[in-house]
Image 1 (cartoon, rainbow, N blue to C red):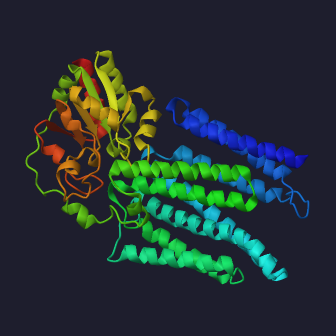
Image 2 (image 1 turned 90 degrees about the vertical axis):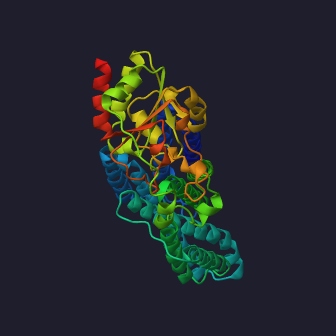
Image 3 (image 1 turned 180 degrees about the vertical axis):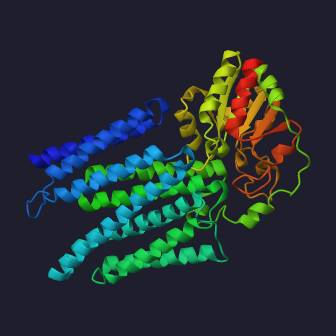
Length: 476
């Protein structure tokens, strides 16, 4: 009877994952979607703890102190981390938590292979080994994918918080592929000859090395793609754990995460004009020297605009488009940005936001940032929609965005971002760019837009500038 109830718990968990994921596609329902999925996960976890019965011994789980101790400690750490994290640190927190998922999947593989080794020691017949080979295959797949996800996510975490610098050397891609090929080859051999259990640790080390070297050279605006890809890896590794334990909810959750992460990676690659093949071999975006060579060192003379002039042209505009970027997140200026939107709307100005898919440091970074400030989702335009409206826009206000509005992506074949779809802000009548200085963006290249006739620079911290701008417009 208990096993039937457990199956029902897993079914409920699987359904809530699907429903929750669907709700996440709409910001208005995203919070409820998280709660729905969390409720399903809670049901599945509690069902496993109290209802799971070993098929061989018929015994239920009994080590409740360890189980609930882990749940409580992990829950406290996760809750405190989520409450304390600043929006600027959200991408690195996502990388850190994703890495923990990959590490968990790798540990599951190590533990399960230990069980396999003990079983083989007790029964070393060819028939029994052949029976275990499919399980060993799932184990080594989970180990490789989980280890790559863990190591890669830790490097991504370090790069995003500034503790790890971009690093590459000649022939690095070849070395990466050699490590990966040896790991896969060793895994294939281990599947057919699972008695050589020491090979498992060779596979573990090679996978960790590949994960590190895979992410180390990647920099610039490419990090959102890497985060999305590593997220899909963790999902696939979790699905392998679901296969091992014949756990339907774990399998469903892993497949959903893996599929969603893969689809998002493909969409992000398209948005950056990168091929998935380039992502998989880690051959893009990390060479600082190359990045610095894109575009000329001097594009001309930029012109500045005062706060009062900016306030005046925005007050008398019919349509204003705001382009948020990482600078807005750094300044924690999303709330005052929403205040500016409300002030302009009260004056009869139509205000919308143009969101580039790779703006910020992780997929959907700007959407999350603005959602935190209660900006209406209806005012957020994806790149294709925004590009259709720039020609009818009077003023574009760029807040900390750089590479996603750089015309070099269209005009300079020598630029490392050449071919990347960008926001066509130049089609607007006036472009105002808020930055702290004329320093290049995350990709390390100079922005031609800053020297174009329609563009004016408004220097200063985004939060302070927006506060002063709101005050000026109120008095206009």
